[in-house]
Image (cartoon, rainbow, N blue to C red; front, side):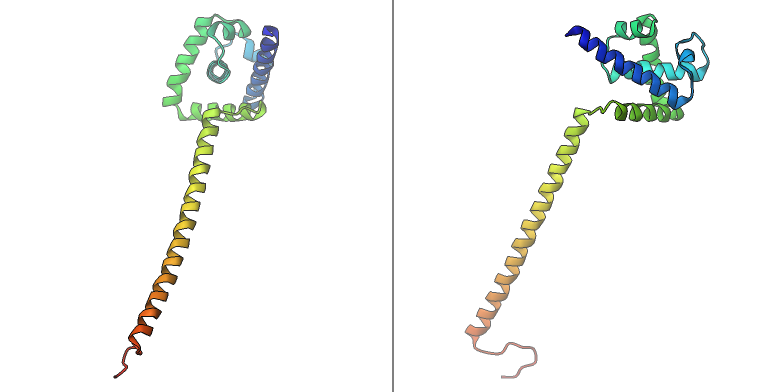
Length: 165
């Protein structure tokens, strides 16, 4: 069972790495190289962070998969968090990678799903309440008109404006 989980995780990591390389136009050998060019480091940093945050992998497993020390992964994750707050271009690139990858692995975020369900329920409830209020308002108008007719009939007269008695 544990081997099955590792194989599934390896497949997800391979997909993530391929997606990142394709999306940002880098070669697989450049991704695994020790080259410290900013665009390469950024892509690696994004991939490491997705492994930690989305795939919920431990630091040591991420390091083992990419053949780097777990402290390197921790450092990149810290820098990633800071860059998301400050660098809008980096954030946009990361969000693009995240969305493409989530679609690629058919990822469903349960918190997001619950939010959608709650908003649908709220929307449906609002519509039902509005329909009920409209029905009650319509019934009140009918009752008001019926009471007005009964009042006219009881008074026995014509209560139109301008009538002289």
